[in-house]
Image (cartoon, rainbow, N blue to C red):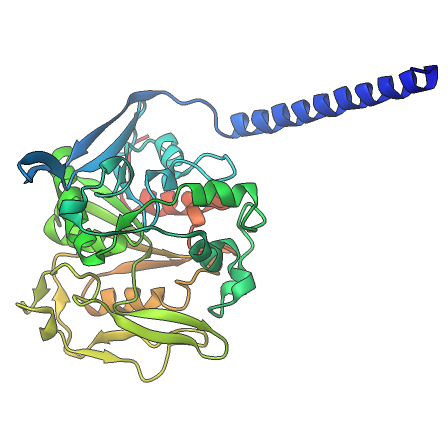
Length: 394
């Protein structure tokens, strides 16, 4: 090797060392910034347990069915009187609340730091709760295309009017982006029968509340459909409902078609208004068909769906007297219709608080706001609402 070649080799080696060192320093700097932002905390308990399962005999052998995995974290300095139960939505698991796909802490850690005990579940038939096909029936497996349309690259597809406002996803949204791959790696098979899911989750969550006592119930997306029945079954034990873009709108599913019409009425999905599980109405009903349903002649605003409500005089959801917070982001596919859920609750005698994040200056979020760049900012405004509604101790 000539002197010139040796010199070039040394230069390349030195440049590589410098680049490696710079990358390492950057990683350390980022890690230090995150550590400063999220310092270590002390737990009184960190563990898991199962609730709600029952032995089921199939072909002469005994299996467990209906069980729900529960991850529990209790801070050493617990300042809040009621724990938060966090229930994920469709295709996902408890990981929804434990971190973001770009590696930051999630809402579970945030609320532990605020002094709350936190119980985070895997729905029955999902993740660590196990799947018993003979009991649950067929499953469906989510694909990455659905995520692309609904929150990863929704601005590209423009299936609903607000989709182009999305700015908070922490990656590029491309199918092969590392953040996208982290997100889609967490997709899990789920019970295909959504009505069956609702009953199984209602029963398991009621068992959890019976075991741990009064609690705050946080439900996201799909889980909204079983949050209301849980509160209906245990109205004195559910101290507040945090409904983060809950399953809806009332009664009929909305299908998104893009411009110019955007909305198409889908099938009847929630026959009891907010759920397929029977709810306690006053005057009482024996069957969901006794609910008289009408659709608004005009939507409440541009780019909104026409809501389905009860025909007046409306029956009341007499057990939903606890504080209710409905959280909606600016760019989500829920933006055209979450107001319908709020209107339905109000008509039925509940008193929900409707938190439109955009009205608070929190803009650009999708349906999976707890996984996006500003997830902590959103958790903060939820915590502030809780602090005013159910104050703890210093």
